Image 1 (tube, rainbow, N blue to C red):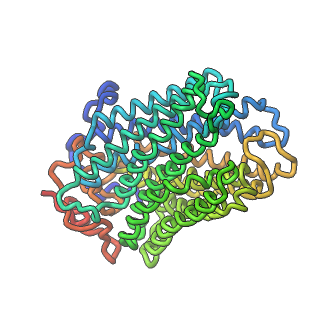
Image 2: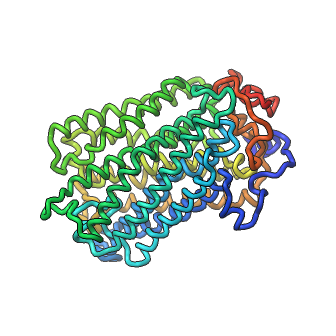
Image 3: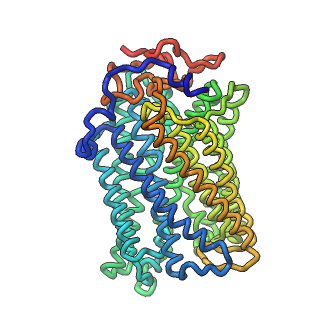
Length: 557
């Protein structure tokens, strides 16, 4: 599909859009428009992404040779801790829900905005405040506990700025709760006439399931970190075993949140892929109902598997057996989604635009990470590879390979709608392919090194592991280039890109029936829905593409 074809898709209206509706800095900082808040979030997480990326770049340089030499042990500990804290709490958790979710949820259900616009803006300010605490911890000397803040080290022994970093994550947690409440209320209360639950796009279902996890799980994280701060600041004997405390209690509390948090990062990514694959395969999603139930099952079962992070922590072996069994069970709904995506591609009229390449990259990386998770769900294997680079590779295949691929896929898919501009398709395809190969080059060697016994969080290692670290560091350079390329050509498209039509991909969905970029209140008239999503015709065109106002057979009345 050429840029010229995309640009000439539909005539553009002359009405003002959300980008033009007040252009001063103050108007942006005080906005309650969900689309502008999504843009603010996008700018924020991009800054945190590059801060975390800079820290891990230093780590990979240190690991290039067995004896290190660039940093001391303390500095190395602070680098990987800062990388983990920033990337998990300030990039991965808010990346898709707070950016694409914020922008698209009201559009996809035919609403003019989210249910609580002021709360939406407040959540962004809370994220900024939490990030400021965390950056202060870095500037003031860093934190060395890792992203997990494990006790008793974080409460008794670390002399770094644990309190400030934990306070930052604590405050950012309230932003997640506010966002989750807002999205749940929006989905329940503001759906357009005719938009029944089983006419919702799968991306909306994914954001809805994610919001439930946010609201139910994030308070447990807040309590955990508040207890760490209380013991560290006030000396309360909560986790100190010498005074009757229990350090294992922190692990139970932390992982009760942090394993469901995996799905805060992955479920929205699944939703993005579920929108992209039908569009570029020109087919309805296979097994829509099963996809919905699988998302809800993942969100629910995710609350019952936290103990598989604690097989070597001294918990009851009977508890470990139960958590192992449940960890295998949660793989079933994830597998259903992969099978359904594959079936949706079968006999489809597939085209390989950049969003599709990113989506297929997600499926490959997520499947690899998911299969490695089955190894970690097995108690004997987990005991062997615990605290090795095998765990690092598994985590990154799911969280970074999967979630970031989907985020970039969604960004490219909806970029014409968000900005009204088209990017270079050639550069976008190149970046998608480069990201896939760069990621595998970076992290697949870590599976081998971890299985052979290379521990994580050490900056010196036996020489026999050097080849794997050299491969990882070289792959990280390729991956960094793949991450930087979109920043260049997407920024260029803002100023020099061709103008996008209302629906350049010939996709279904209410968001494609309004102008690009959308107006401040999204729609001129209240949409009315009379069919389900993904209504693609057999010849490869979406229903009603000849009439812009009737995309996906949704009439605007």
